[in-house]
Image 1 (cartoon, rainbow, N blue to C red):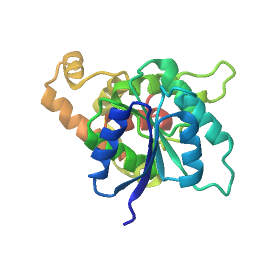
Image 2 (image 1 turned 90 degrees about the horizontal axis):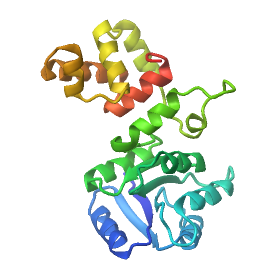
Image 3 (image 1 turned 90 degrees about the vertical axis):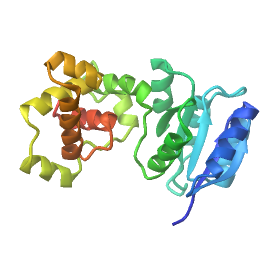
Image 4 (image 1 turned 45 degrees about the horizontal axis):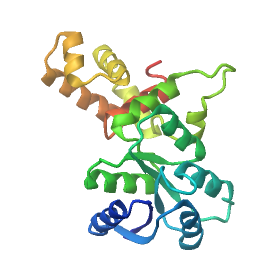
Length: 238
């Protein structure tokens, strides 16, 4: 299998060196370039054409959001598919939504583990948007909000998140979510932890975990965040 070719656009030298060193040691990932500011990053994107670009929001000349906006504006049908993973310490709603509105594919916090970052890179390269769990509720809330004119909210136009694949639609038809599972799924979408759900429903945490596992299997989801997004986009939860 070909390695995922990535570039790192990060102005903080120690952070950049650390990221490159850690990711180079991960199987299936190859770092093919680095840049310390936005202008260099744009040139690198255009010349190297990586599979995935890790872009810091807080760059010193043009910020990461503007970099992504400019790059996406120049994309044509002939341009190779390049995925953008924003890497930042910003958890603010404005930063998250602005990043996706500019065309970012995934959003990851800098304090994430290297293993999680490697997983995020792989998923992003495969076309599956990865949202850091710590800021997932910002995205979920935006998806839930109806725009004033009835159109799809901006964020859902920018992020292509599959609701439920055809195979899983059939599974749901054959093995639909129970009333209790739907109740728990609604609480997951609301941002509740397993302990919160257990307290609200007067059941044990172990029972909640069993229900969550069944929900993930039925939705074909890898984690709670993906399950919540699929539930919202498919209309299971409103």
